[in-house]
Amino acid sequence: MNHLSGIDAAFLHLETPEMPMHVGSLNVLELPPGYSGDFYEDVKACLAARLHLADVFTRKLALMPFDLSNPVWVEDEDIDLDHHVRHITLPQPGSNSQLQQYVARLHSTLLDRSRPLWEFFVIDGLRSGEVALYVKVHHARLDGQAGIALGRAIFDVEPSGRRIKPPRAKLRRNQYQLGVAELLGAAISNTAQQVVKLIKSVPAIARAASSLLLPEKDENGQRHWSLPKTLDLFAPRTSLNVAITNQRRFAARTVPLAEVKEIAKRAGVSLNDVVMATVAGALRDYLVGHRELPAKSLSAAVPVSLRSAGDESANNQVSMVIMTLATDIADPLERLKKIAEASSNTKAMVGRVKAAIPTDFPMLAAPWLMSGLASLYGRSRLANILPPVANLVISNVPGVQTQLYFAGAKIISYYPVSIPAHGLALNITVESYNGRLDYGLIACRRALPDIADLADSLLAEHRKLLTLLRPAETPAAGVEAAPPRVAAPAAKPAPSRRRTAPRRPEVARVAARAESAPRRRAAKAA
Image (cartoon, rainbow, N blue to C red; front, side, top):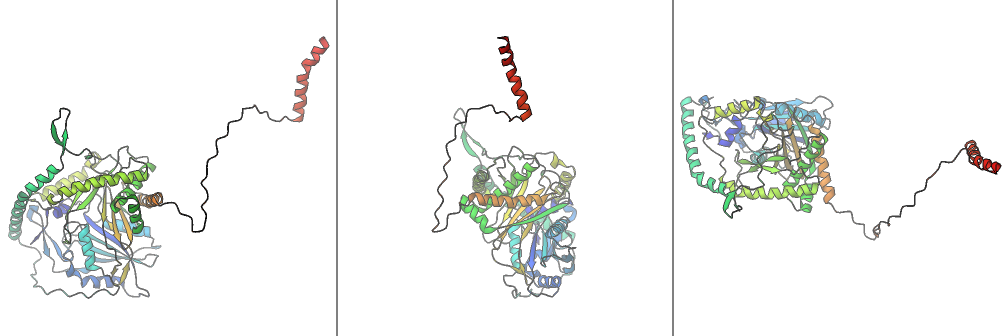
């Protein structure tokens, strides 16, 4: 049996109707010139020939009795493509805004756990004449890097596709579910293996924990160990740190990857630092506009991959770190510098403990408890009261830098669609693809109804960073540059004089008589 790891199972146990735990992507496709076929049927035919290339398509959950332990993956011998692949036509005018609203609605519904945990939606009716493909897969099945590997299985690098070798014939067991005794035996055996594995990893975990402590001396010169001063356990409270509903808002934006690399090169930082700074600047502008910017800097929960090089297994090997966004700094370049410095320190810390972070751990009798606590946490709205650890989730997934095709159509974009959570109502995931950097913003509708404004702020912040870092244009050859302007010395202020308004003729005559009357009286008296 294929057991779920502790991390894989956690995505199942923490799922609630308000917090679905699937990830997805939105691709815009360009049909071949002169295409006149039925693209929905072409998609089904393409997938039918490739289901055996990835286990995510053919395996479903077998739940343990009374949820005493994690489920296992079993082979589904009866895949219903009409259920997993669906067709939607947008109403007129078929705008990008309508497409993104529909994706938000599709992303808010739970996957059917009695079937393999994936769905494809072919969406047409776009006024551009293009077709969209929205895909969602449960996070218990894969993380970001495993998702890239899944994309390689179903996408092609040529419009004509590639020859797919048919699957090897298997003996059908005609067994819808496993027996109770078989499942309980597998649960006990797997739990024992997990306990042994965890005990063996204790020394490595202890060494990793001690590596986080820093030696210091107190006033008396006594040496002791303490946590890094940059470690901040709590983030400031914002309108994003609330309990969420199952209603969603989604926005997609794109910037050229070459421009992001140019910013990183000119600033001497990494591409991920530029992404973080772009999001930080957009959030700062958004919160300033709503008069909600806290004095303390916002923090982001950032997933970090624990995968070894070349590992493309369809499971989760990921952890989470907290990163400052330096939103208390107004200057964009100073903010970028601060984020790069914090990122460097975090990478060094993760490098020391990465190998010791467990991805599998025993959960005997824990699933039902985790599910109950997750439901209680959301419905009691404790996220509105407890101090947040971070303000949002930001994830950067390195993608494929070649042109891809699906069912003969050219893939134009690759927007990721991820998971908001209680206390973290906004998730911004970025994926690079074929010279693009595609931003996917997904949020609880009640917490962030105007997510399109925040997405536009991302583009504005990107242009701002690019403008600040690009040097001034140099004059063309043979054209003499204008001499620098020298400010003239400030002129001394002229002595103030009282200015009188010009008098009208009749007023002037009356005033003249009034002024000469005393002189006439004086002459008469003499």
